[in-house]
Every structure is written in C-alpha cells, then in structure tokens.
Amino acid sequence: MGITNMNSIDQLTVTYQHKFGQMPAHIARAPGRVNLLGEHVDYNDGFVLPAAIDRATYLAFSPTDAHHSTLWAVDINQGASFTLADLSRKRQTDSTPLPEWAHYPAGVMWALQEEELFVPNINAVYSSNIPQGSGLSSSASIEMAFMVAWQTLGNWVLPPMQRALLGQKAENRYVGVNCGIMDQFASACGVANKLLLLDCRSLNWNTIPLPENISIVIADTTIRRKLTSGEYNQRRSACEEAVRLLSRDLPTIKSLRDVNLDDFNLLAGTLPVGIEKRARHVVEEIERSKQAQALLEAGDIQSFGKLMNECHASLRDLYEVSCPELNIMASTAQSIESCYGARLTGAGFGGCTVNIVDSGSVRDFVQFLSRGYESVTGISPEIYISHASNGAELLV
Ligand code: ADP
Ligand code: MG
Image (cartoon, rainbow, N blue to C red; front, side, top):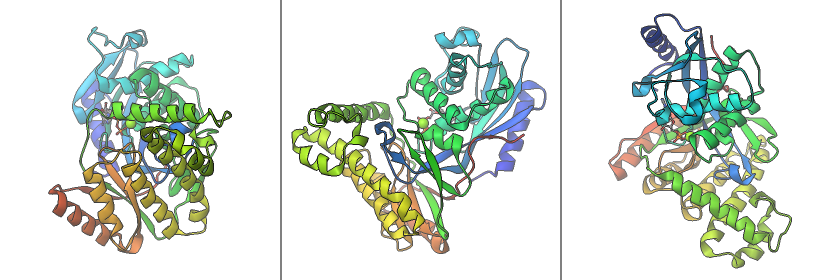
C-alpha cells in the first residue's frame, strides 16, 4: 500500500479545505472486500465467504445549506453537483449529464429517498485505495461510505445489512449493474480478523475466525477487461435458464441453491451443454462452500485450500470467467509450497487472485509469485498481504 491510512485522511482533509474553505465535519471509511469461497453464487441464493479488507474508500463530508450536493472525487480529479430533484433525470445542477462515477453516490441518495429517509445535501470529498474493477469491490465501498455519511447527517440509523441492501438497490436500479448482495454486505458488515459466512437466501450470517498463522494475500494481475457486464448478465441468464429447465423435473426449486449434486448429475444430460457447464459450477460451488465452515473451524486449512483451488478450476473451465493472466497467477501460487489455496476472486475476466498462505513464509511467497508471474507474462503485478477489517464506519 503506497499511502498509509493516516496519510490518506490528512490528504483528504487538505483537499476538502481547498474545495470548500473549511474543515470537514466528519470522515467515514468503507472497506473493499475479498471473497475466499462461493464465487458467482450470491445471485443463486448460495453461501459466500468474504472478508472486508484494509483497503477502503475515505470520505470527508459536512452538511451544507446549499440547495444541492457537491462531490469531489480526488482519484479522478472530477466533481459533480446535483439535487434530490435532479436524481431521476441523472442530470447535474447545470443540466449536464451526471457523470457515471457519480451514479454510485447519487444512487445511494436515490435509494434512501425511496425509503423516505431524510437525505440532506452534502459537501463531500472522497478517495479510495481499492483498485477499480479488480474484483475487490471499489463500487460497494463508495456506496457504503456514502450510506454512513447520510446516516450521520440524516439522524437515522439502519442496521448494516439494511444499508447493504439499499446499496445493492442503488447499484441494481440506479447505476444499472445487476450485482448480488455480497459486495455491499461485506463492506457494511465486516469484522476485524474474521471471515464472514453469509447465506445469500436468508441473509443470516456469522463470523469465522481466520485460522492462526494464515495470511490472506491478494495478487493483482493488473489486467482489466472492458465490457464485462454483458458477460456477467449472460452468466446470470444461464443460471435462470438452468432453473427453468431443471424445474420440469424438480418443480419445487426456486434457484440453483435448491438443486443437490446427485439430482443435478441425474438431470445434467437434459440441459444444453453451455447451460449445464454454468449450472454445474454453481451447484458444485455451493457444495464446496457448505463444507468451508467446518473445515475452517477444525483448522483444516489444507482441505479448505483444496476447495479454493477447485473453485478456480471450475471458474476457468465451467463458468469460463477467467483469463490467461489469472490462470498464470493462480497456478504459479498453487505451485509454491507455503500456499494452501489460490483462485481468482470477484467476477473474473481480470483483476485479482486471493491466496491463503502460511504466515511464516508469506514474504517469500510474495516474492516468488511476483517473479513467477512477471517471468511468464512480462507484467509486473501488485501483490499485498491483506488483513480482515471492520465494515463501514464513521471515523470522526
Ligand atoms: P469493482 O469490482 O471495483 O467494484 P465496478 O465496475 O463495480 O468495479 O465499479 C467501478 C466503478 O466505481 C468505477 O468505474 C467508478 O465509477 C467507481 N469508482 C471506483 N473507485 C472510485 C474512486 N476512487 N473514485 C471515484 N469513483 C470510483
Ligand atoms: Mg463493483
């Protein structure tokens, strides 16, 4: 991490003063997340195992008497200004289109207004050290930071899961990205040093201590694929189609969560091959994630790591959301002895892998992985040791 948290807060405060001529009243922080197991299953009612990470969005803000909200996004050096009344038209106060990056905070304002909560105008400056589009949920962290801000200024309190659900609604219905609940959940509900196990159907969740002597390493391929939302929507449609076709024989199923592996194996031949591959990933991944809690609680990291490796192979071969660089990063890590498991994390097509590594050897691991990846791809990766952190919070 180039900048420390303290530095980034200081810089943010200075920028806020430049923009608005006074100190910000508050600072909020909302983390990104990394998912250890249960990939592409949140929208299939499955189980996910993320942790909030120590990379985050920091947001300096104050209430304002102005009749509009004013944002400044430090990392892209751009501002935007809008009122509640402008939200549905996606226009700024000067009638120009609201830039896409501003749809995330504006969407939060819109979702809160839909709930008839008080959402006063805000002056805000924000910055994040979560790489964008890398599978670590920079978008959810922005949403959850603004949730905390408006909760603070609006004088109401929502439980973190409720804030997560409204952030998801903002992203689904305002930004127009059909994401599941995992990203906002982890950013809102994170607990330091813990993994989070979420049942995406009931929304019940609990924490699992990260076993001792284990480090989470995030390895960024630095590859970013464009136009992945089409691919993502195709995967979602394939899952829905699988449910429709399987429900001819299994009339009670509502989602792939309801299909056990034995039934799936019996009926797999009735599905078109393309649909069968997508659905098999989901059914098998939900099976894997059901085993995770017991393995982690028993301290059986070897077996848990094997599930992560199987998950990567399944995302590569069945769900087909990997790319050559992610495969090289995962297989290089898997060949290093101190690594228990490695797989792509997030939606795929680029971005990061997540690795579970023996803490005693983690620095060597980072070096070997970095060199190994660079020697094959010619690309210098960004690899860092990550810590499970608390969810979105008001710092000041
Ligand atoms: P991710 O997997 O990182 O969540 P998304 O495509 O869902 O990727 O969200 C990325 C989008 O979120 C960016 O295109 C931008 O609009 C917004 N965003 C992320 N980080 C920042 C930032 N630091 N400043 C402003 N907007 C950001
Ligand atoms: Mg996102």
